[in-house]
Image 1 (cartoon, rainbow, N blue to C red):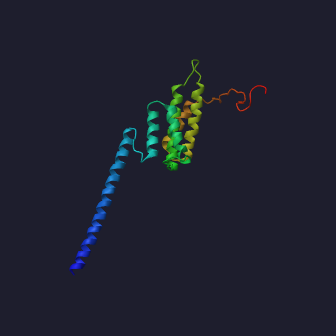
Image 2: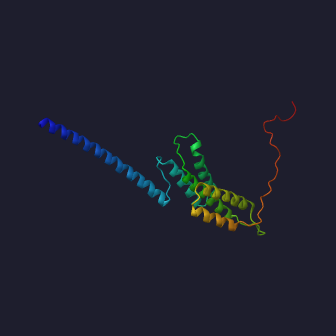
Length: 187
């Protein structure tokens, strides 16, 4: 009887020890996730390599917030390409995350177009027209991935109200064929 009680106490002690270790691990994870969420909410740059997607997203978002739209679009574009690259940390991007990425790309392009809105004669600057058409495409892609996104619908309608109805595609200059791999001169 005494051995039986002793074995039960040992078993219960082992279960208690495993429970305490599990609880301490969950508390550690909870605190770590809380720090990441706090950094994301405050807009601070994340230094935690455990969340590469969130770190890159926050960096690109900060670039756009500070007015560096080109760098922000590049950062968000890298997020879309990330699963294709073989990096040290590969992460999967869900459809909803892709929609948010396209939405942020469109926002940065739209804001970039608004910065260089008109020429001296009152016409829309070529770079602004290009940014507007790219933003329109990005908003449409965001809506294709997440059709219920009210923010994307609103911003697309806002963009369409800014774009003139008679806007035509910009005629690009035809450049000569590049023949860099052909030998130059006579032999």
